[in-house]
Image (cartoon, rainbow over all chains, first blue to last red; front, top):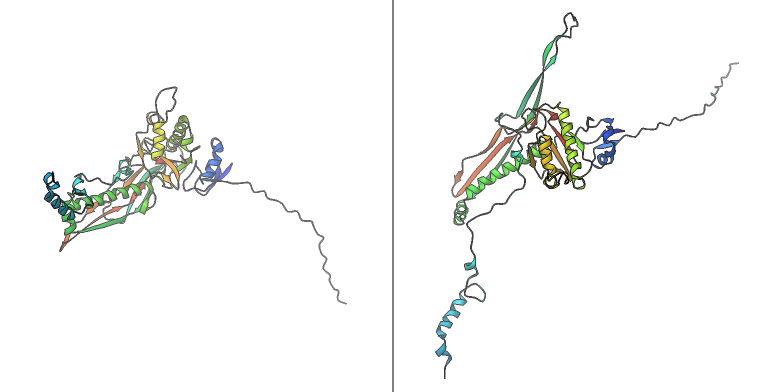
Length: 66
Length: 313
C-alpha cells in the first residue's frame, strides 16, 4: 500500500512529505496511522482515456482564380 | 431570704460585660485568634514533573557568551584497493566532515522588594530574599525541563524533535494487554537499535513516558500465570532500559507518546552555555533589586538515530 508521510517525523523509513510502501507487518495499523495523522493513503489515480471520435478533416475551399 | 447579690458578685458581671464591649469577637470573651496556631513550617507549591535534569542526557556548558554553537563531526571515507587495481578512485582514504550549528538564546528575569516587605516576612519567619532567589532557581529548572523535552523558546526537544523516526502504537496502552504493551515497546526498541546497527553509543538505554503510561506499565502484570513481573520490570530487565523518566510533557496535542533514547553524548546533549547566574543585590533607598539570567541552546542532536518515538500510547 502506498502511503504519504504527513507527520513531522520519518516513519518506518518513509521521509516526511514523501510517498513510500507501507511494510506488510504494519498494514493492519493503517487506520491507526490515519487516526493519528501520520500517513495518508495514496490511491492509484485511474486515468480515464478519453476517446474522441475521429472527425473527417474539413476540406478547405479554395477559390480558383479565373 | 437570699438575694441575688448575695450569691453572685454582680460587679464582676458588670466588669465582664464591659470587657466584652471592647472585644471584636461576636458573643464571647475568648478571641478566635487566640485559638489559632500558626505553624512555623512554610509549605512550598510543588511543581509537577521537573525531571529532565534526571534524564541522563549530558548537560554541556561550553560556548559561554557566543551567539551560536557549531559542532563538527568527522568520518572516514574510501577504502583499500587490491594490488594491481589501477582505478583512480580505489585505494584512497579521506576524511569527510559535517558541521551543524544551533543558536543560543538568553533568558532573564528580575525581582524587587522593599525594606518593609523584608521586615514583614522576617516577622512571619520567612526569608524573603531566599524565597525570591529560590523562585528564580525553580523557574530556571522548569524552563530547562520545558526546553529539554519540547523545545519551548528554542524549537524542539527530546519528545518532539523532527529528526527522530517514529511509529504508531497498535492502540492506546489502556486498551492493550500487558504482553501487547511489552511487544509495542520491544518493537520500537528493536527498530531504534537496528537503525544504529546496535552501536552501544547510540543504542537506547533510557525511556521517557507520560505518568499515565508509567502507571500502566508499572501496574500491569506481563503474564499473571508466569509470575508477578510487571511490564515495566520486563522492559528494564529484558530490553536493557536502565532509566525510565516520567514527564507530563509526553502528551502532545492530546496524544501520549513514548521516546526511547541513548543517553550518550555522542547521540545528543543539552546545551546550556551559561548556567543560571544571579546579580549582586542592588539597594536604592529602601528598595532592593536583583536580576538573574542564563543562556541556553537546547537539545543538540548529533545523531538522528539516537532516539525513536512511539506515538499514540
